[in-house]
Length: 343
Image 1 (cartoon, one colour):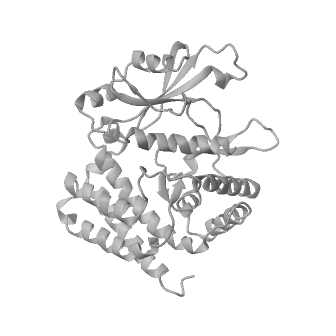
Image 2 (cartoon, rainbow, N blue to C red):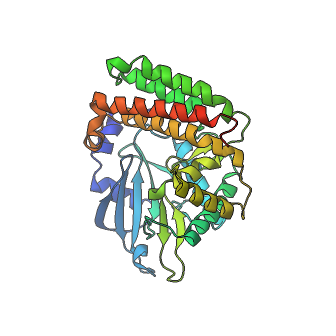
Image 3 (cartoon, rainbow, N blue to C red):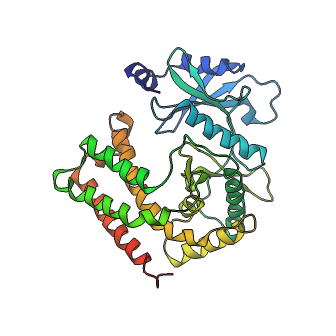
């Protein structure tokens, strides 16, 4: 699906009328009160609705999500929503959008934007987890990955070196954002890294995963005073990938404490399903691909004023100097990890 300037203009200047209209199309009755929520990629609002059957404060609100033009096709978004519905049906804690029949993403006729509506669910972030909570998180993530294997998502991107490495590099080069002293060395380094790590990804089966499973996308349901339970949010970056991607993002550190926490999480994970310990060798390659992907993501969005405000350093040579240094460090770490004596 191709988008023009008209849809982009509507996206930047989304009106309250368009938001309320989208909610009403679901058969809901908004009160007129809406609160914008923090989202770099989409336009998200919490909307108060009339709900005589409300059993909790959250029942009086829904969340509308208007997708950035050109980011995803309707088929890709529907695959994300199908994954969420599969999780709910398997009683894995997540938040699925509201469905009308088999559809959950719709084209708003007035703006030409794709949108959906989510129920509101309360939850809290946790900065630190005790051992029991780490184990609960491990078992919950294993259940998510079990569901992820049940269905394909052929329209979603594959998290492999050719896409997150070379594909993102191509876009960075075409945008002309690299400073002159790195226009040859940065691409050369990325290509060397891809050549080094590509064999590690061969022969491994891809499946639906969260894809962006960092701490910020895990909330804890505190409604049970005896035991808080985790649930996952923001499946925008759902990909075809490997379970280790979600695991290393939850425990990203390299020090001994991080290794102990990861081992504890994996021990609980294996109570639900097997884990391929050989895939631990993908952690540093995946971390490296995430660095490249992050720079490409900002590059794509650089014309959006909110991105220039959020990442003012991006336009400076120092940003790319740091990125290049980080990639060189990663290259060395990966070379070291491929030494047979490393594990």
